[in-house]
Image 1 (cartoon, rainbow over the protein chains, first blue to last red):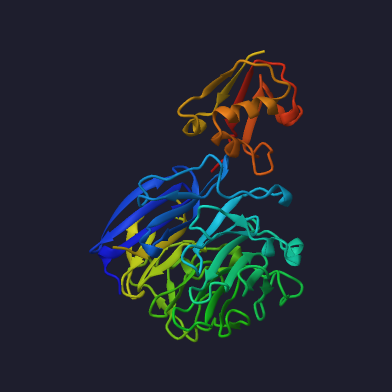
Image 2: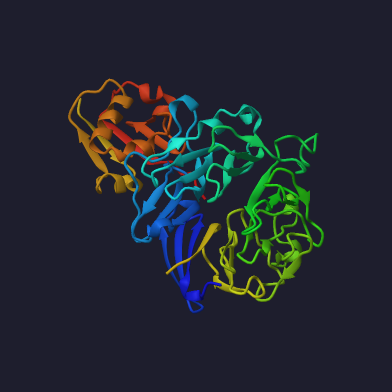
Length: 357
Length: 92
């Protein structure tokens, strides 16, 4: 388990990126970087000890870009010619960057964006290209945007099998490739789309987040737009794991090193705030068969909070989440108890947690 | 006809601090003016135009006092000596 003095958080908010460092239970904060711009994606690339930070700030006026820092966030570049742009042939423009993920190979990076697309780099971010296999997928013309646009917001890669990549997009659902992105197949079996006449379509689900178990290579978890699921076959077929939850609606999901699954249920897509005004993190230590409410240190009265899809993360058995009301919470004991780190940040869009030395 | 481009202060990060750029030449269209502006300050292009080369939705470009969207966009003929580039008032 990581110690406090080895923790680093990249917290993307509606008004910029904050970088926090934890030291024996005390936290320092630096930011906002990209002041005034929303940051939905961030990533610290620690592979090969390179310690390069990436972020995807978006100005609603001047557009989104992929920015890099080689000095641990002190300064960020903004290339004259932006790294990621939709090719002319797509007749689209980049709207937002939702996910920055390491590839299975140490020099590979993947970025998920709106409009629903994946960009890839295989030279540690020097050059980028649109993944054409996904862009040309025949389902594309039937995917439909949600409130945040039509976006690939989740990318799960596999260090042991670099050609295996799983993504989630809203609305479309889960897709995956086994050949490095040449071909993508849809894998939503069992996942419900209650908002469609056919509630179990091949695709069209609004999957909010997927995550893999740290040791069980074929076990995945999924937070859906109403529905919490588990897969035992590599994110191909899905089974409901909602027993014991106060609601099956929510956005974020993370799995700690211990294998504990964490979600923050919200009261339906009509209300979209914590059930009964209680901020409760639900933890499962048996792959979703049962859930326990974690409340110690969390407000249980008049707490109408929303936790967005990338605003929950873990590093070791340290769990973190941020809310749209700008509260940032931490647990150093696999969710047993929680502390407020910051209480008045801008709306928190993303929390990325790392052990760091 | 020489023309002066006045930029939103939000863009001075990409111009070395300048918010005024004077171009001493004749231009057939607003797009031609901007192409010359990009040569001086290349980073402005991706911030003012989207990936398809169109004016970003929340950026407004005025030729004199007229919003070029209500004229002929980037093809608007230049008949004034000032261009203003603002971020729109949209936001949250």
